[in-house]
Image 1 (cartoon, helix red, strand yellow):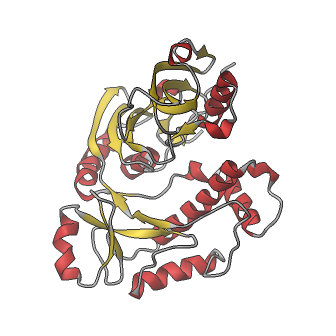
Image 2 (tube, one colour):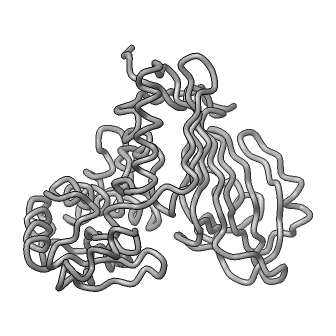
Length: 338
């Protein structure tokens, strides 16, 4: 047992609510389900819903994976399921809170963000005060947008599976194509984290050759004049980005580009160095190196217990935010639901 702060000692310590990207239309062949789950993975719920609807698991859509050791609420889409029947679903580990029809399947990334309410336990008073001060700075300057360690599996096992897939070796543990894509996205995440860690300047400072992202629209452009773009970075209109490697990656130039290429070579993922299995596409993309927490509020709830409330953009990790405020934390392992 360490003396570090702790999160997720019980599922109720870690509550996540998905913010939808768009409202349901009320008509169509798909039924969107607002599901509350507890100590279940998103994939487990998708398989359970597929059995209920007698469809293939891959026909069930969701916008993103949510933590297992938590109470989470998120949307799923299921083709052909009657909304009235769906509202009757109350199974061990999950229940349907709402159901309405929509025209299309829910796809990965179709969310506006996630709202978190969590408790951090074992926080002495001095650390709690520092965390509150740190929260104020993160709300202004933004937080590093690195991927959380849980992305990589136990002892980094997802990364080894991904490398095996790219070498053309059998990777049965990766499962179907959805599973293989997830493993490859975990490797993309690790490479991105490596590039982020190699950044020699604050994340609010642009370099010539950076690919910058406009936070509101998602547009990308190459930075040619830092003096011109710096004021936009200061007000969080734009930020530098890092690579999610793939077959159509927009690369940085200059010093940022050289660092990215060096990281890709370390991972043996330089141009022409990897081959995707048949049926798997990995186009690549860019991800902001920083994001701004919205509505970040830190408050003492009980003796050495701190409550954190925040909304983060899609794909950003609240565990990273917690680490930035409290340092390394231990995560609890609640007992499984029967």
